Length: 393
Image (tube, rainbow, N blue to C red; front, side):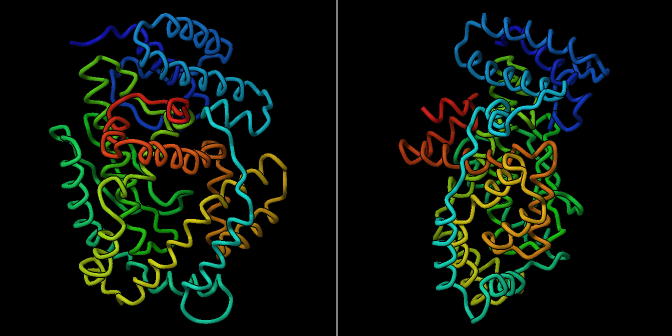
């Protein structure tokens, strides 16, 4: 039995109206084609449409649907204010678009990670140089990336299907791209399908590949979009879930799912054994180097907040790009090339506030999994319209 689409249609039409002014605001759409009107309409007209939609949402009887749409429509309103030329403080921009606060990570956290890396990395000399040398030794040759990815995806899909049934016909294509601000991307296409792109601007290390493919594929973005299309858009008639927005609170939950996707279906011990065994042999790498990189990766987890701090420097404090690049090289131990790639991401208009969805969303989902039955929590996140506020409690 399906629910009425009286909210879904104006919601989807408004999103396409915003996307006409800000291309990329819509990340994916698989609903009725007649609702996908990208005619360039005046911003005041769209703002009035957002107000009427907000009133509709307030009268929605289902609390779960109402809660999700409330924060989504609020983010649309923030986007329209920004497009109209209103200047918001960076923290207010992040809060308005994603319903979270941008948190600064103390530099002492990064210094502790550096100390752990000093113990984990082989060799002598500058820490950044040793890290990059090890990364280069565990990089998968570009010509072998898809070959190595195939058994990883097969295993992840099998484990995800044991977590909960996947829709019949779900699938995705995977390809290699260049000149992008991100390392990997999942493009929702509708009808339980998507496309995964892996960016090869920088070498892709074997030790990062299972996490990358879990993040973008099983049980991450592809799985979430397919399951919500099935359970919400089709089964319940909530067709707003056939649309994905890039500047909205849903991304916090989506990235939180993706950041924790690998740990939802495999233990760290299983991943390590897989990498140093079958996958290491398939990629033609030295298992001692892979083991060393795995040890270093545990310390690198402590550097997850560097990019967020760099975004605060750039957008909140107005520091020059040269200073932000130096910060990234100092605390992320990034090469100039990696630092420029990070700066490219946090400078992109669609991603300048997005960077905090990873750290905040990842922490919210991880805490929820640790506080309850991790399997049940993850199943709910993949199939229900949960908001960041719900996760934060």
